[in-house]
Image (cartoon, rainbow, N blue to C red; front, side):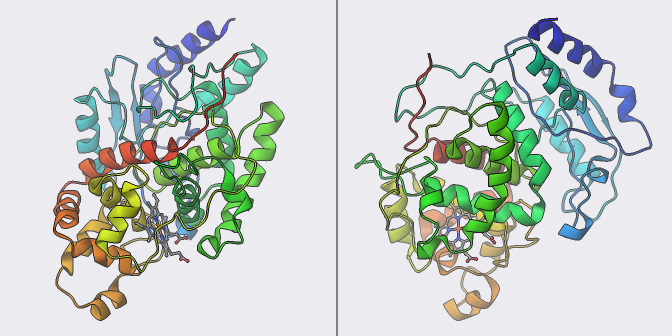
Length: 386
Ligand code: HEM
């Protein structure tokens, strides 16, 4: 069986799997998003149970009764039971999100899961010598998000990441992405998403990130047994997974990054003491607009800085910033962790975007997806294809 027939068989399974979705027992799902080739259907699972804390997070129960199966023509077969969990997004909203997705031709920016068959499919694909074809690349190019960029290798990386990643570890992983990519300087064409963070862990701004690197070391060891993976790719994909398992959008990630062999210039990351104009300038030097600064700062919805549930990726960051628009710095400080977040809410242009994202979580997810994609492609040195 060649790779296409194998995947066609998988498609068959997906297409006949809607009855599984009605099962009363928890359905085990390999969370593997897939987009290989043009005609391959993907079984997709939409799930939105958000446990309030890490203890309650259960890899199996997490998926109970929330399944969507789709094909590449975006003709969705849905089977989502009402979900009464105490998460921020209940079953009704899940259904809304799904119908929204059904009407959307954009694959990006929605929560997408592959159905369980894929885990068992990976070894089959491997044994049949399937190789992900990384699109032709050139150094320092930016890529647009695409439906087809999650290759077979990405899938394998995601699978290994899922074995070790938890909601508790997600904030640190997402921060790691920014601290690797955020060194980018557009004018100097230096820094960026190149894995150099592993040489920079002693820097004061990177305190605490060695834990996250350690988590990914295990993944790297496993993936390297199958094919070499760069730190830059690993971190970029792990950040996407971190967002996703915390309830955020599914962000496809192009792989094929080369790693730097040394450190990036220091002093390129923004300081938490920056005011809005310093933040805007800092992001502009990386090629990011004010809107992208604001939407990326929404990453602070994860972690313990006071923006809602620390394990849930949602638009609480913006809602909470809006609740206290005129509070004094000292009042805000007790509510919200970072002065830089407060600074955004005091700038007219930033505030406009904060309001937009506070009102519309889907807009936040979509714009975050695009900005994240740009971030993880910043300054990337793409490997040359043979
Ligand atoms: C806008 C400028 C930014 C500044 C000044 C900033 C600064 C900081 C600081 C000081 C912390 C606290 C670290 C600690 O707990 O010791 C933090 C946490 C965090 N940052 Fe940022 N950050 C910025 C933008 C970003 C961006 C763009 C992302 C990702 C896209 C990001 C992701 C995170 C995450 C997820 C945490 C929580 C980490 C945890 O709780 O373990 N940050 N940030």
